[in-house]
Image (cartoon, rainbow, N blue to C red):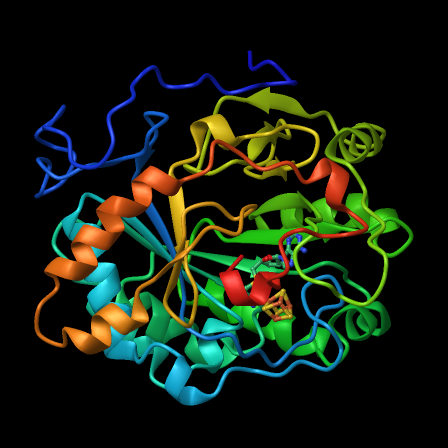
Amino acid sequence: MRNESLTPEVVPDSRIGFTPPTSPATSRHADRTLVDKYGRHVTYLRLSITDRCDFRCSYCMAEEMTFLPRAQVLTLEECLRIASAFVDLGVTKVRVTGGEPLVRHNAIWLLEQIARLPGLQELVITTNGSQLDRFAPALRAAGVKRINISLDTLRADRFREITRVGDLAKVLRGLDAAQAAGFQRLKINTVMMRGSNDDELIDLVEFVVGRGIDIAFIEEMPLGDIGHARQTFGSEEALARLRTRFVLLPSTETTGGPARYWRIPGTSTRVGFISPHSHNFCASCNRVRVTARGELYPCLGNNDALALLPLLRSHPTDDSPLRATIVGSMGIKAKGHDFGSQMDAPQVLRFMSMTGG
Ligand code: SAM
Ligand code: SF4
């Protein structure tokens, strides 16, 4: 049985950059593995393909947002070059995110191309669901394996309040469309906010159980100045509240991310918690992020980044500088984040929509 206050172990390996193969089955390029200076293997890229969004969630964005000029945003071809370089270096999972990835024109083309990269095992996306009623079948045909859909409330008026502009009915139609298209393990992502949606945690779990899908509750992170104080709600309190209604059994399952999962006996639903405050998961971190303007952030909770866009544009036909920079980024991946002391005065000034959640 899993320890409920799990602290992941540090991998005792201090090699940086390329390493020899440990298992020939890891990828087609098993001789090229990204390892940081704390011995963590990076196998997962989160790629933001736009900073734009059709919602303005109050925990993610300021009410008045200025989006990037087009010339400063990666083209879809540049997104593909970056994904391709990472996969060539041993990354096996790519998540396309944003902003809202499905508002990017021709996003499906990009997904089709990424899905075909030799060595990639899993292409997944995170979306607010607003465009899923249109795109769900195309996503499935493109080779997307799993979809995470953000949904913080089941009440239309509250949904409008949190997203500032969103239409709950449209997102629910999108969820229907994704299930009808045959996506099996859909997951709802819910950011927990005290005094806003913490009274709906049980309803949300009942909702996902009814649909046979999963849910992950996320502790809000202090990313960007959103113009108001954040009222966080912790995983332990959420778990205790859910246990007043459900039997929750700790599970050793993982989807390759920081979520810790619980099962509800008699259902297929997994209930996850992503707890950057109460359970620091940095020691097992396997991911890096690339923003819509091509900045490579080895750590979500840290400001160190490397600019890929100038490299791509000054070497339009040669990916070796790009690959060398990606390998070099392993040397600046921070050991971990500390969000605890930053809730009121965030030190990471980028919005989540910039970095790609
Ligand atoms: N627009 C898409 C969506 O909402 O799913 C993808 C991008 S969004 C930035 C990715 C995820 O980050 C969403 O699940 C969202 O709820 C989460 N998120 C945004 N700001 C956050 C914050 N400050 N703390 C924790 N999660 C956040
Ligand atoms: Fe848009 Fe997603 Fe941020 Fe909400 S969480 S504003 S949907 S990018």
